[in-house]
Image (cartoon, rainbow, N blue to C red; front, side, top):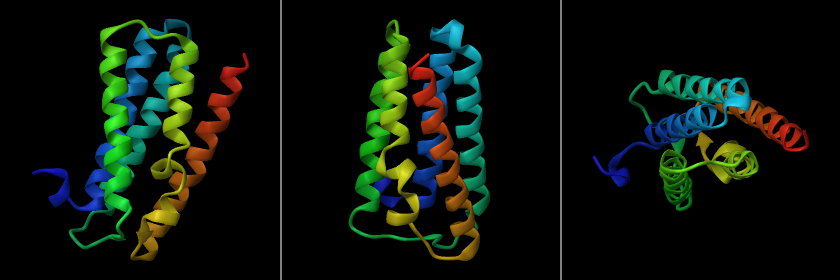
Length: 146
């Protein structure tokens, strides 16, 4: 199934899983920050699980012209970064800057603004994910200054 036929909720879940995979690779490539990157990876995987649990077959989000395009853009960026990370050495600063770019992206940071939940349960989960994304940004900014 190509992305244009997948429900938005499934694309959001897949995006979280890919971000988690990227962070897992960073944990393997940057041994002195393994615990940090492993933690972020597990949290992204947990985000995907929470999104998956929302999917009851109904339309969980009101789609607009921007939502699918934004998801595809970020997912494409993450896919490219996964390839780079798998095929070469990663500097700590590159990993942090890439992660900040992902976490500050429209999908991660503005999911309530652009991915309008169609019910209160979805709104609650997306609000939680926004708060956790803010936490990730702060963690990345702190490690960047260490």
